[in-house]
Image (cartoon, rainbow, N blue to C red; front, side, top):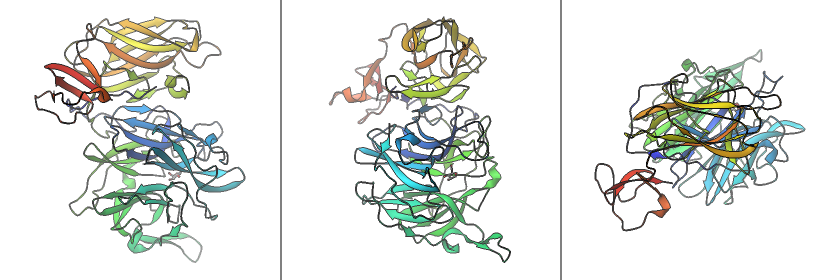
Length: 516
Ligand code: FUB
């Protein structure tokens, strides 16, 4: 389903600190790669998935890549598995390691690394799509980079102002390669010397063969190349295992690099022996994404993405970032009177998010006691009268969906009980008359009860939801592309707005809501 999370950007609400990290709680997500595409209101995060496969608990089993997006930093839309390993005929099961996606022209290129069926080493490959949320397919039909020496993992790609694209990669070694104009070829990779000046120290072996660091720090893996002003930043997992995040700076994308220190130390107790970072600027703030073991059932092979704000000193150096469970504050509220995807989630328990070509992405694997929380939902001053949900259910028994606020056991404002819709892919809209008024900014919870019947895997499938006012025409909703030129639009404080983005405005003396 299309991403329709709309941000009422003018009504920023300062809420108390809540447990916000990890940002995805319904599956394990690792190696975050954030990106904001010019002209797109959302922040996207690309990642690989730590999958729970029985029998594999002592190493990574990662067979697909996923995409998430947000407009408010607290509710994340799960776009599902946008790039499975099986999209790459040469890929080996369970080996999808760190990745990063960039846009060039009207195409999205997702650089990743995986092994081959008969080769333990990783190879760097690239997927391509016309949409940021995929689906992505193999852009080349074979790998893009391999030095045949192992450690060819964790590609990061940065396109500079002159349109040149640089790809850095490597575990226990560091290389960069300049990409061709079509983004699917590369010049011969250039080795970056891991010196003390550039990375704080050098890994060496003593006479007994034991490894030690000659210096205070050292490059390990997971590079992330970025730029602010005329400073280039290279962030990376450092120091051996357990890893912390360090960084170096340069005035050129190819170095020489100067070691600058630790961005996120091991003292932050992320619970994961690896860490992997990505930085991004979004709506005026800088953010550092990393991973932890903080989700229920988390661990070194069951990691989860997290985010905290990143700030700089005047000289461009980075202030150390503390990994916190409270995470970041919401940037805006969510409009419940617009159709919202069931997979736009703050936190959830039990459910899964999947997709298929006809429906798109939806929530499934729903059991009694599971819940979905959506944070910072702004009902305004007029309470909705009803809630419409789109559901599909193959099994014949009756189950129920309730909506509550405050907590998963909080006040119920409406419930619906229903049986089969005719199939797990036969979708029906059900409108629930609400039993209580709800106004103002609230966290809402969808809760579920019933029995999953034999041979079924879910109580039902859940596609989207939308609250309805008594008078649905009270606030006119206008698509961004339908705004007529030369019509005066004002913000809610009465100031004329030249280029309105998504949110609530005044036009002709009436409130309108502009959507994407
Ligand atoms: O996720 C598998 C590997 O663990 C990544 O490629 C590394 O960066 C580390 O996070």
